[in-house]
Length: 414
Image 1 (tube, rainbow, N blue to C red):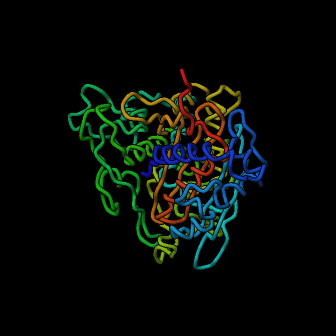
Image 2 (image 1 turned 90 degrees about the horizontal axis):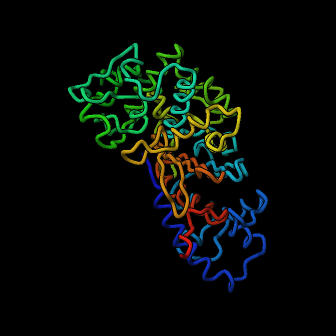
Image 3 (image 1 turned 90 degrees about the vertical axis):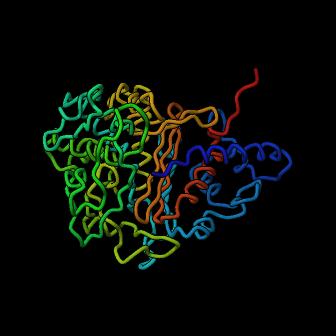
């Protein structure tokens, strides 16, 4: 898992202090100056104007990566291609692809090019679980073994006082011991079922998912917990996981190019990115395949991830006819009491605002999604390189400054 929201917030906060100190004396073109005072109560330029701010050398120059264009930042960190989307006023303000999808073919990244979302698959899966709860298929606080029909989670003596529940599995507080991510599989090798992953049986390449502490004792990030929920959802819906995700979340939200299909079908692979590292193809395989689909299997782009975040934001403010209700959105945005995870998302205070977010890292891919709980702004950045974290940090920081997010704000004077 990649969780860099706090680092982005601190870097951007330092940046805005410098910006405020010199704005009056630096000759900044009028559109850019107004864009850097965007956000609540400030002007935001057209999508083209805002893209120019993000893409260009930063003004004022506060050292570091400010002296580089976005293209130069990507080159510096060996990231061939990225997908970016910005949320403003509860809508996608703009989305754009940069660079190349595959260094071997030179195919460009466009707004619909697919990237692996890695662990951002988890909150998308959590929304499907909230749909199941709304339909009465199970409750968030049900014993997971009462939901599962094709497998049972051994308690190992740790569940006598408290059961493992969907809420705890999605918030990484269930007491599971796996700390691993999922390395995935070459498309040409045998792949395990969800049950084989959970039991650690061949051909799984990870250890079994087991209880090591009582539930709600601590937060311990667990991809295995989300894999248990993958199995639970297929049990209650009686459908393959990619299909139930298409019906419950992807199509209703408008994530029109996204899929949980593993491996990616050839027609979709035609506009999908390759895994890279250091500016080069990572291996002979274009990408790895993930049987742990709920934890790591979503193929998507920044625009579709932005639509997903907007769905949560609109549901949270009580808009009618959303995929999930306001009550369900509240579950996805309220930490469970131990650690900083709610049902699917990490929740954190940045500056003077509260944000929900999730990062992701698969073989040759890194990405990040962050959005404000109440104000209707956010961003998604996806990269097709293992070293993409430094790039998405810089892109998020530039977006924060250009749009005037309250992640940069200080407390008011008393």
